[in-house]
Image (cartoon, rainbow, N blue to C red; front, side, top):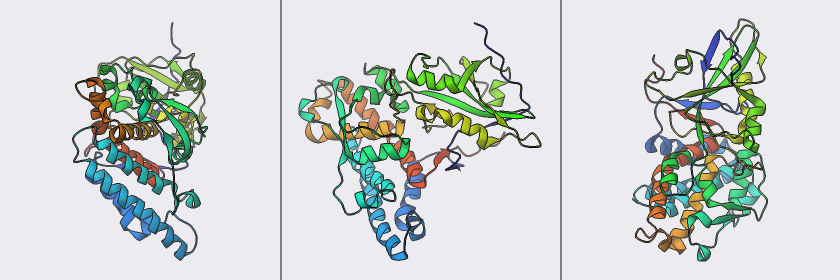
Length: 379
């Protein structure tokens, strides 16, 4: 099949897609534990930062910040302790860190639900029935996870919904190799590169996927994607225009937004307008976890219905699941009886730790966080 030609353009800007209404934060150094922990700690220790999250009188702000900072201090203590645990047992500490980080993130939105109240996990799981990861599911309850899901996605999870753990694992890009090696399925996520292009009258967005894309046009996620993007023939200069090294030899596929926005006078691309075109598929997008791409395409949890599950929430839910087993049924991770499961959850504890901090900082700051190695912006 001959692909349609891409729209000719005279201006282009490689840029990460982000919520134009919230903005984004770019860092001129790679994500690291010291950098992220320091920037989370400022929310707990600097009054001007913490109080800014809340409205009301100074007294009301101080009272709310007292709750906020102690959720964060508890989270940071658990997280730093987890860094010293070398295997899956760390998931117990990571989960309690993430639970308290989530409470801090939710407190400005739901002060009467969170502050000084008993708060449920928002998920339940019975370790007594646990046998294999492939067959286990989590059940949605009222509580933190359900509220966090609504805040981050704009969608609501029905109480009582069962979420298969196997499907959650497929939504976490940094453990894709381990998921496959442990015979627990395959990663459903895809790294993509993003660019805004323009001619004298129109601006639009483009997505570049290296390798074989996993976008099934007949699935609900595929229908969302192809409603707003179409595959087009690739330009000869794609490496240079997407700022990709010439060492990359993978097949590349180019997708162009179907809609355009007017280009302002002077022919400078309308970056925010073009990014809004990309964000029309936000239900299947996740914040990137490394510097190799600009965004992660994360399809719906199911092919035949839309249940958005960004990687940030999949990590949270899987860490809750692992913490339940570590507490109540550690034999499921016996490396002699269940070596694949032990291998998988060792990887989760190791590989998800840093992305979870990026997720948390983005949640507390209210904007996506992008990290770039020093010198990345020099040609």
